[in-house]
Image 1 (cartoon, rainbow, N blue to C red):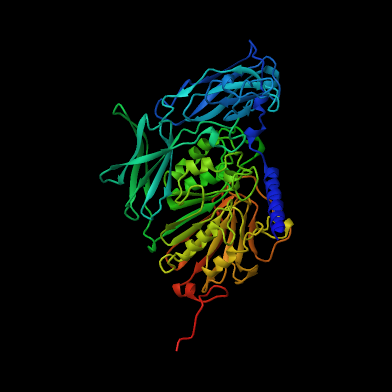
Image 2 (cartoon, helix red, strand yellow):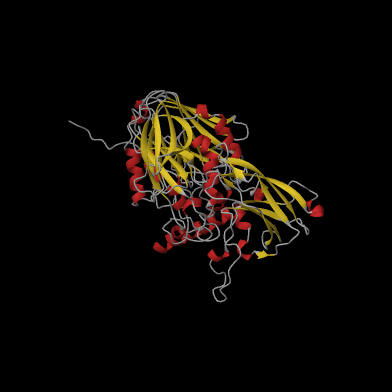
Length: 612
């Protein structure tokens, strides 16, 4: 029996690992930077302007890069490096026996091909490119390469450019605290605690403002589990600060701004933001939740994206920003950045989602691209995290887990109770996480919070994705074996998953059987759980099987996200929206009373006895 489970797990790990490799490659991973050779040419040049950025407090700015190459070719490219100085003395030897140092041992933070804006570049050798830079706590330089990505030849290096205050506090991101009336504010800066004291100034709109201190964390290169995170992908992440805003009044608008008190008495301020505090659990009011997985990031200047690694990411981000007044909380259920060991991409991602995350709680879950690495304790022995093994995700974002390394937690939002599982750790019956999941589901008062939501990154329920269908299981191996008993016992309304990059909704189902023939409206007894794959927020899409299972109500091979709207304790609206236009393409409603949750169903009823 033991060998059987070992074989099952090995097969699953291998198959799912290959599935993601086939879907695309982190663009920076294509650059063989350690093999760079130097051929600086006296007639070649590259320059960038403006030299000083953020003169009016901006945290992002567009840069013009002009360059000349006397021997141009179609595979020439321009890389953006930060810090600006290439220092081969800091690089470990490529060949220990010969003590050979590489000229460059850090990947660029982004790149473009030289001929992107000029089709005549290969003839003239002269062109210019536009890059958008964000403040990333260090200066920048641009390098012109020939030889393509596989055999880079350094031809010219530009002047350095920098932001006026590279250490500035940036990229605020909110998250629910461990109680309903607590909001956390996390941000990134270049200030360690021996330079400045981080804090948040906050209060109800138009009222007295108070200051709350913040804790400071970071992580080092030796915290990474493997390459590229520990080698060419490493970049100093700066300092991550989190403040806890407590005893909030329900449904109030609060203003806040992040700051650092320098030891000379002056204050360095970040932007001013606002948020609306959480409703009291069970409060009967309009509440709107957005859920998606696998979004990733995309550079707005077009750099890096030659493999269409996350082609829908900006569409989803921008659609949410446009509708932000109608969103109360967001759940990004795994595969956040797809940085895959290139740490610079975490800044890019937090900058991209800042308009959303600074305004509403941005709750996250752990995915394979955050956590998985061989022999690191993850349930799947795949290299999908690029050596990060969960460290950046656990540090860059707050989530109300008891142990940050065990990425499971519960959180309340008004009429909703959410149980967020970690599919990258063992969830099977008898495991520590299984105990948490049961406790989370059992603890909710369904009279006050009727809408019970389960979520995990990998599909632990139902998906007719092609690689699952080839296994004949439509799920992760062992996915629903034990958990379906809990979903049924505690009458989970909807279970959400990512990992598969498309959208699919099942019927209310239990033990592989549809328990309700309706498709657009559900009412009465909760006798099965609706399973939803919503992993199409941005990353390369996943194909469906040709056969449509009987339990599959709606499938869509496109980018999108889900929105849940609770009107009150008896009415819930589910909507699937496409990222490209924000329109609804699939929907259903649930109407029911508390007695419907209490009603006995198969495997979902407390044992009873006849009393005399």
